[in-house]
Image (tube, rainbow, N blue to C red; front, side):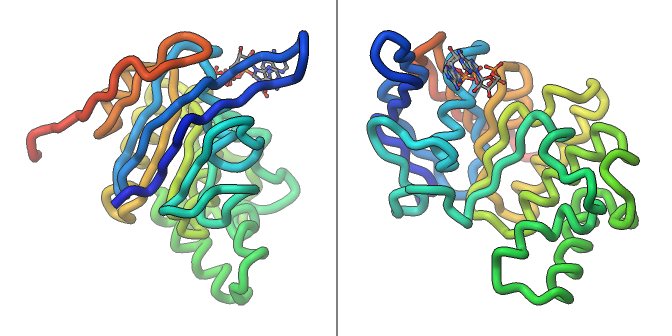
Length: 228
Ligand code: ADP
Ligand code: ADP
């Protein structure tokens, strides 16, 4: 079934002489369970596109539908992982409290919050670090915490904006493997944005290639690997 439907999406920053069209008339759909990458050159509008899908900024044209419902505002069955993990975690909260945080806005008891945070930390390979603070962890581990926090509310769609761009090559490989495991084991639908075509082909089962700004979709590839 279709998870995400983007139709004629346009976003313009500013008005009048300062107007800048960052995304123009983009249309595509993502199927449930897919790990899709959007790849394109720096500045082509990828982050803007993700911000529109996540409801962080309003589209100035077109529409975004998440399993059939029009997105307006930030939907609660969608989660985002950003490149800059060091600014996205709360430094005054422990890792466990960071991961529990999104559940505070849902009707989840304290005991269940704790249990779910511990479970999801274990699933990203961070069992036992819940009592530490983010600054006590390596960059790669901090990004795992961000991924855990995104997953804790069991989002229908996980958006990732250049999630591996700030970590070293080895850590990147580990996080890529983690992302594929999340898709496979949790059945998550993931839309990941990157400027790295290599990464997109390695990771995804669908790759949408964007041209330079304002981007058009210049290729839509299905990566169909033989069974392992
Ligand atoms: P990408 O993520 O592909 O690098 P962005 O979505 O960040 O691209 O940016 C697309 C275009 O929009 C770029 O030309 C960028 O300079 C511009 N842009 C991004 N954010 C803003 C903003 N807040 N105000 C004005 N222009 C912006
Ligand atoms: P990325 O390529 O990772 O999307 P950018 O370097 O394009 O990041 O942008 C970094 C930040 O600066 C973003 O928050 C973006 O909104 C903002 N930004 C980018 N271009 C502009 C611009 N022309 N005017 C105002 N803000 C901008």
